[in-house]
Image (cartoon, rainbow over all chains, first blue to last red):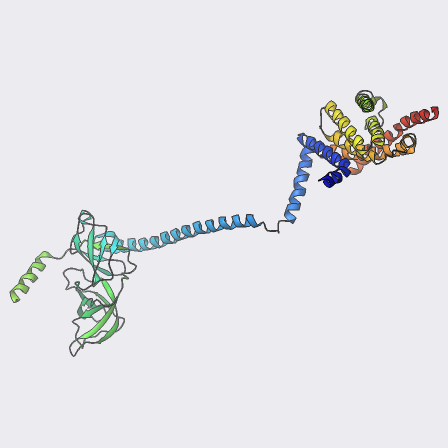
Length: 278
Length: 164
């Protein structure tokens, strides 16, 4: 300590001089005249140049903060981007559906899927439209791609739709090219449906489009169902035809309900005749 | 203490003269006047060293600043520097010799030059005046004029010496 004081004592003249200079400079900078403004500008320019020269040296703490901020910004932007992508896709979907709705001769009710089961043998979807929206049991459900299924149960605001991937649904169908008739059903094994009751000699090729037939009382004729992906034989009488549905049930989000009800008179007559045969 | 009081009174009187009567000696179109306060500071510096010179320079400079009501601290800065530099001419064994010889005159010129350089260089910032103009119109003329006036105390010191 004594050595320190002695050391400082040797420089006391310079220390006092420095202190007086500092006081003078502080006093000078208290002034607000043009000279001081000029000096301040010059000082800022010098400091700025020096800082700029040393700006390549990274500041660890500043970098850490900057990194954190950038990560947060990145996360926010990713969320934003995801939302925008979602909105864009929804927009495209809705545009297509709107176009489809406009082109449909039968009145349609658009619905959003709010529930879906695809792992059972009797798969259904639940939609957010019911009797209050003029949706009733038996009405066909479609998308712009093709047939989805039919309404089997309704409440005032919701409906259950039996889809093509349901063992209980049978659809009268037709080969669009060769006009060969058959019955569409699902065997419950994969995402393909089958066209049954087609004779071994019928003209069916891979790639043929299958549509709803005129013989159906539930579905209006001409709704696309799918296309053939495999044509084989079950036995000596019938063909084994595998159909890939046009509708992808995994990604399905919005549907249309056709306000088309089966003809009751025809239905009644067919029922009576079936009873008589039994 | 009495000695310090003597220095304080002399310096205060010099400041008063500098602020009131020195215009009588003004020359050139730029009103160049001798800096008699600086002569007093150099005298103190040679007698009392760097600390005495610095302190006397600071106090008298601040006093002039306060009297002029503008640019507070600028004169204090220039006079403190001048006082400190004058301290380098202190030699305890040769004080009388220095005060009564050319050393005092040279010291006055050097200190005046440094003081004026600091003062005018800052004072004319932003005025658009070229640095060569500042040198030729103010710094060098004031320094020479002060040097000429510094001969007066040398003459008095010599007379005092001869009387002894």
